[in-house]
Amino acid sequence: MKRSDIFAAIIIGEVSAWLILLVFKNIRLELPFWWIIPVILPILSLIGMWLASILGKRLFIIYQASKFLLVGILNTLIDLGILNFLILITGMASGLAFSFFKGASFLVAVVNSYFWNKFWTFKKKETTKDPKEFAQFFVVALIGLGINVLIASFIVNVIGPQFGLSEKIWANLGAIAATFFGMTWNFLGYKFIVFK
Image (cartoon, rainbow, N blue to C red; front, side, top):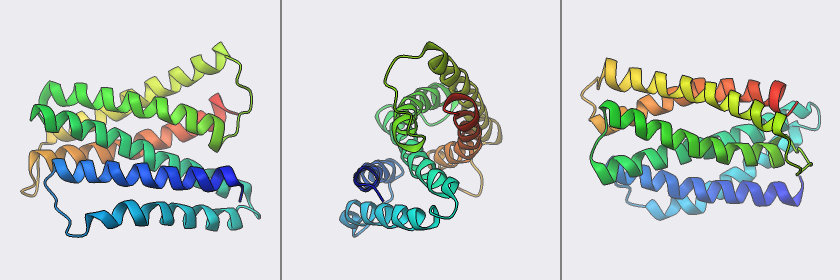
């Protein structure tokens, strides 16, 4: 495992931990030992990447997919963190405001995804500006945005809160469900179209 992979796993784990705490604050989930999350997540991220590097010696795509998964977790938490921050400061967790918040949070996560996946996951060394690559990335991301926002908005605004869950928790569940569909599309698009 390279030094850059060690640092990346630790950074992703730490940032993810603080974003989780922001989400928990918005949905009013209080943890008695909250301080353990920023300590344990970087360690777990590092252990996960170490195990992936061992398995990746036999089949490289396992290591690459593990990097994509770790970046995907960070992107999901950036998406959820920004979404929850916007819900927290406005008090609006449904309707058109939710769809707007979800679109904005997804776009920030996609920009983050571009840089992490280009330079770390798929190790694209060139730093020159390639308009074709950016255009491909933009199209894949735009389709991912549509998938993500449509599924999340459908779950939140059409289906609505179920099982006695609060509007804020339901908004997060809708966002998470949409993320799985968007992440699948993005991995395939980035691997086979943008960073092939």
